[in-house]
Length: 232
Image 1 (spheres, rainbow, N blue to C red):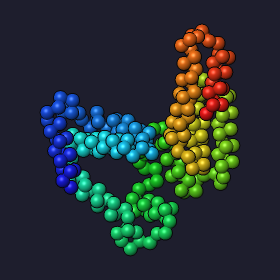
Image 2: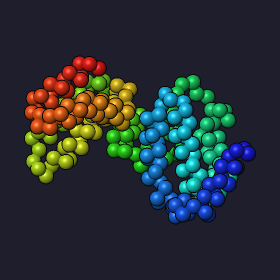
Image 3: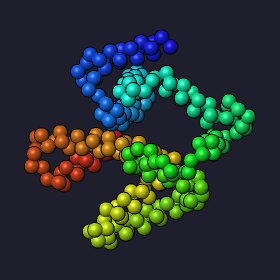
Image 4: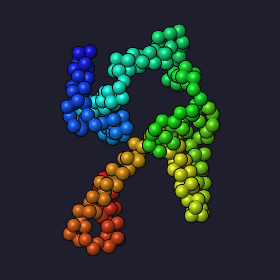
């Protein structure tokens, strides 16, 4: 595609002539993907913003490939072959009728043990990912009540844990809470981000009042918080 070729040429020139771009390596560029993906996540629902963020991710893909001396054409050919290989129900004779059957087919076609390779995801997202994989093999509770009981169990263990066991028990609690999202059809990263934004929105009203009264008592701050909560 002509426009894509033009983009690659622009990035190649940046790699040669821009002091910052020319110094970038796969190691320095890869962490930026997390930042850009989260910005894309935050842009959902805003088409113009999504277009901008997707462009930033495309820039990183091309620049990282060039920094790693990966041929863009060969990269695309490899992706094409991979897509065809993993979709025999589209490009071959396999028959599937539901998204669940497609996922089972993918696991069979990939031919890898279920948890052989873990993606480099944020911890909550990784926990949910691992739990979904285990669930596909039947290693899961039968209903959401079982998960809730597990959360209660882990919370009690944390409450009674010795200092050297607290981190382990805290991790177990977070792991169980992340799994609750799978049962509710909720992504833990998205849910937690929404909670953080809600906290920021409400606490900003507390901060606004603190400007006039920096020695405000906790009880007064809590009253402002509750009012902000009621106004939403």
